[in-house]
Length: 473
Image (tube, rainbow, N blue to C red; front, side, top):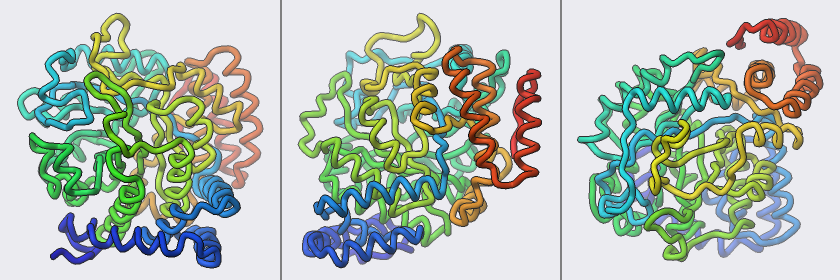
């Protein structure tokens, strides 16, 4: 019998099944204990987060007044830690060759009618130029697990190619990596290649369900997959990103497991997850999401987002174009701090005339261009940020978290966001977006508290108008 131990390096001890069941029982017993709920919300308001058990009580609580308080608190906590900035990124799919049998993913080995493709380095260059021409500075690269077609050497070469491409004023300044669980040695190689965050979705924390959903291939090994972040940390990667695929298993179980994983990283490494993603299963080739009977409503999805922000206040929260414009408009107020724009989930989807038919990993719900997303954010009083400064200045891992938890990160993030927005306005924006953006920059300059920093930022904004680029604090 495994015992719950957040400091253990064994998956079934830091994500302990019995502990989750006891947590859910405790939550059911206390969901109507409004005195306890209020005390937990008061505690969350101190910006120190909540435990998985405390958070599960809030998730189970259905009192409308308290739920509204959760939403308001989440929005305030996000502003306290990250201001009104929203970081922009795009996924880049390198290859959909995969040896796994994941039943919810169209890349699974038995799918014989999906178009399989692996980008050459020349094709990667074309994809990157297309992304740069939109205005993107930050990518998350994705690839199926296939040691023959997608070995670590291919991933490393691709990262090198991406960083090498300078087109007009474009440059990819941060490459995050979302590839299968691997060895400490390979994580060390990724760190040496200059990656930003290593991202790996757990899919589900329920071991029995996990093994059924991954019947074949190396991903079938629950422990090896769940313990990947510890190996990544051992390999020197200090920014890691968690996530579950909501809809595969009961959402309350997943929510507790996700928070337990964050607590484990804090307990063992002193650094929690740099990001948490909240994807929901979506329709794709050979995949019908209705087959999975654990889907969650938009209302429940919004509550989960709010509670992640409340309970893990320092983390970056990512929402992808899996979600519709309507849903993204809602949850952006509940603590989301990073969103993708103009995403393609097919291999070779960005370069003109190169998108193969029938190769998407999932259907994209938000079809807007990057310029339309940037415009929409600013109209809602959010600053679209293309900043990558913390990663490039070595403010990662515990250094980033210390600044973030002390709420000092805004002293550099706010002016950096304005300067990267200015670059976007000068190089890529439509006339309407540029007009809105210039007004926003002038307004937001006044919100830089340090007079010296504000003056330097103003000077750099003028430099950007004179075609100089890449300034950062």
